Image 1 (cartoon, one colour):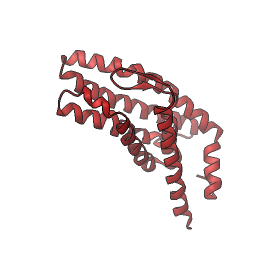
Image 2: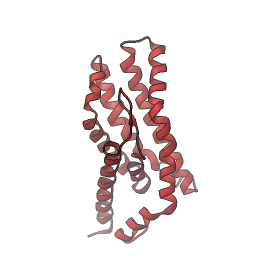
Image 3: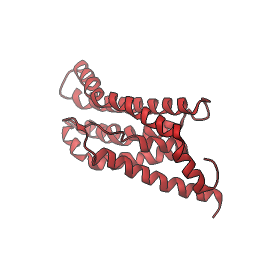
Length: 196
């Protein structure tokens, strides 16, 4: 097997395992769930965030989009909060598909910022903030249909902030600890036979 195809196979396998691990951490480990969707989890975004850092933005975006579709399957009940077609589309795209796809951007600063830990943490913070923005857009779209614009904006900022702010704080810490140890990249490098 050629080195590039071996790397791709390893990336595919590791990405699938990280998606599965994130799903388990999100859906099967007890967390604090909010009444209209969203929850504070035990570092559930860390594994999928690592995909973009280890394998790059392309792998990250594809893998995290797949993870978003899986999350959508678990969260189909949240479509009940939609009061119109625009709200249904917003929930599907901005609460799930796009909201999780942006987590694949975690590696954007790798190679741009010399300090690897700083690059990873900034990438994760950026990705988490983009996810928060996606949920904000959905919240305004959904609640705008039953409240005035400023109430919808305020509700979306505060409601989505109750679970996203803890995730924005804990996820970069979890990623930093794992990246600092280097254990995952070392293990993958040994499998592939070279440095990642």
